[in-house]
Image 1 (cartoon, rainbow over the protein chains, first blue to last red):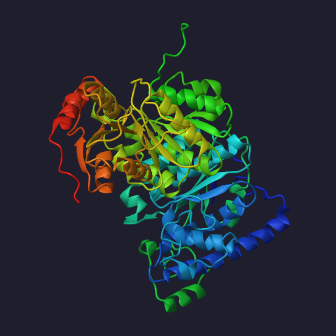
Image 2 (image 1 turned 60 degrees about the vertical axis):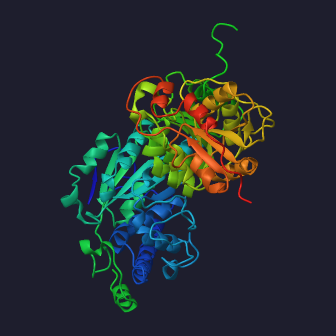
Amino acid sequence: MYRTLNSHVPGAGPGAPPLCATGPVLDSAHLTVLAERARRARELVVDMAATPTGCHLGGGLSVLDILIAGLDRAGRDHTELVLSKGHAAAALYAALHVSGLLAENPAPRYGRAGEPYTGHPGPKVPGVRFPTGSLGHGVPYAVGWALACRLGGRTGLGIAVTGDGELQEGLVWESLQVAAAHRIGNFVLVVDANGGQNDGYVADISPLPGLAERFAAFGYDVVELDGHDLGALRRVLAPARTTATRPLAVVARTVKGKGVPAVEGRAAAHYVTITPARARQWKKAIR
Amino acid sequence: MEEGDPVSPLSGRDAYRAELTSLAGVDPSILCLEADLGGKDHPFAAAYPARFRNVGIAEGAMIDMAAALAVAGFRPFVSTFATFAAMRAAESLKLSLGYLGAPVTVVAPYAGVTGGWFGTTHHCLEDLAVVGALPGIAIAAPYGEQETRAVIREQARGDRPAYVRLGRNGAFDSLPWDGDTVPPVVWQGPARSGDRCLVSAGEYGTELCVAAVAAEPGVPHAHLCWLDEPHLYQAAAELAGFRELVVVEDHRGWGGAASALARILPATSIRSVAPSGWPAHGGSAAEVAAELGLDLPAVLRALALPHPLPHAA
């Protein structure tokens, strides 16, 4: 699945060549590295579901590939990735760890007294700059970061990763408007469109028909892709967009609980607490 | 004075704009953000257009964006009316200035009922309660041009988040103080002891206390520019010798300076002169405040009340 509403989006399209400087062969090898990171991170997220507190498992597994690709992108310049859907904190901690940005394994520390690994992330965690979890705030943080890159003459993106339910927050659209009006073309919004939210399905609670068209109407370049395709994610995030005047919105279609068959595609997987024995079973089945 | 020269003293918000524009000439990290209430002829926009952004009517986004700009190394100053900063964007203040501690300065004119006939939606009698409950944010309510400029200079030098509370178009000469920075207590005149002391907070509260001292010379008057908890503890140390403080503020009695001082100084009698109820009618700022019970007669009545009992042994 790959659809663009703007034919001029650099790096867009399923047949587009890899945009990394290392070329197709090494790019393929790097994709293997990213896939292995994603697999290990899924194991850690399952481990965090097996802590006494449990975790937001379904949305953590849906956003995980976006985080792996986004953190990989962030290491190349001044790009900052902000997880606006902060309830997927377990996935962020896991992704930071397997990406080499967080030294200690967060899983055994998740939710525990005296540890910074709270259910929604904050700046006490190495690799996390902004507090998120009250939905919407990560978007203006990323817009501000992108503007800072432009004003400071630095190359980098401000990437906000939101949920699709999160798009019900007014602050999201307020901030998207500002980014478009100020032509902050190095701002990138990635929507983890897993179709679920706390109390059920987005389609039942507050549907988002024509989502890609809405972003286009706001003045955004728009790409719709498979949010579990690391290659597609990597391609669309690769350009530095240093001269872009339109921000980029990426609608990443994902599956809640992705990679863990017991919960994949199940709305009930939003928040999960499991036993260590079950975690061992689930980790063996990760795909 | 030549035609076109600025009128002196400047109002608080004009003093802010003038001082920030001056500071930006020597500090390229200073940014100025407005949410469509900065006026069409903002001097910063004219002098440094690349570092000025009118983000539009988007207060929460502005404050969060400013936090990111601050984390990236800039020194952003943002401004919108007090009620839109402290109430509409309260969560951004909590997360970005409070928890994150990003060195953003929020400059908030139209505090209290200085909007006069603008009506309830544009008044803000609750900002000290909201922002004062958020640890780590300095709060200043300067009185007059010189204090406003000094507060802005101090914010440009430092790395702490702050909320700066201003009025509308009221223009005053500040009470004099010694030093570069505004101290925790600015005294009006030499009287600094006695049984009872007037304590003022906020631009209009201070204006009323200055008028009260003119009516009753010799009454000590302590003006508090800084209204966050650490500064109030410092101020309280200077005020602890009085048996009674008459606290006058253009903010609700609950959550303002009076209630904070009552908590810090449990052995001191605290009388609060503050507006109550909802400002639902038109009029000048003074007329609206008077309808809510905040005017010079109210201050003088409080001063005329029987003295409290002596300090307990």
